Image (cartoon, rainbow, N blue to C red; front, top):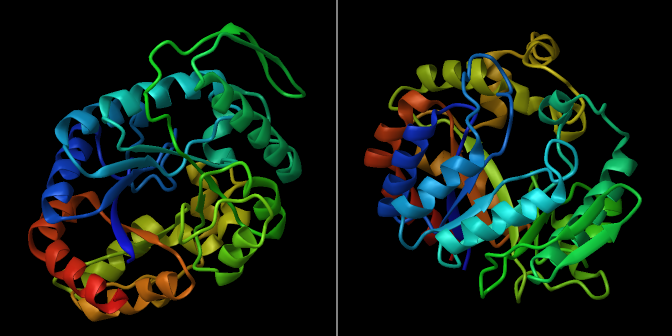
Length: 328
């Protein structure tokens, strides 16, 4: 059965609001909640970027049963993997085993802030692979030393290690990343409903099989509103960057860069890619591409902080009912 999640979008909401929405989303019946981990919003109109890990600690205490996840954390530049190992273990303890660590190769927008430059994609993927190794080893609770191509760890130990460990989901975008990470991760993350990614993961020798022990976790933006025109305008103002695709979005360094790159994107262009307005069936139709591609989990992004409470109060439960019915 397909599971449906709610996105705690740090780029569009402040920290206190995110904790409130997390509790409301659990009450609505979402199966899991994912949180973005950014230093910048994509566009200035979104207006926020609180520290995800502080918010996650609060969310772990404000919720009881809903699963939690980073979507995604980059453990290579802004964060050293030894630090990611420590904070992921801490959140897992606070969440009583409900947390999954979602990892990815990152975006220049967030990682450039520490002044280490922005490597080519093949280098970033090698860095991510080594970072996963460091995190896995530290989650053993042992005292470790590590001297690798990119990272050095000296006499480090994570003292508060959860008994159930920390599952790791890794973001992939194509054949090369699937072949590199399918055997390193417990679950797969992808930002497009690609059956080829699911098949490639399952065809990789030694990889946990999606549909059995592994999950394939996707994400899709929606812009529910009682007025369709209002929804389209809001989606254009805050989410037109989405049209660039991962390979473009990963390399732009600033919100000004995203604004410039998307200046020719029209509201109708956004509406063609993001379901906008009150029609729940239109949202279900768009989301269905994920379960048809073999994804086990789909997280919804409701665009606009100003709409979250109304969405959760009025639309979330009937939408979840329709999604679950359609997904079988």
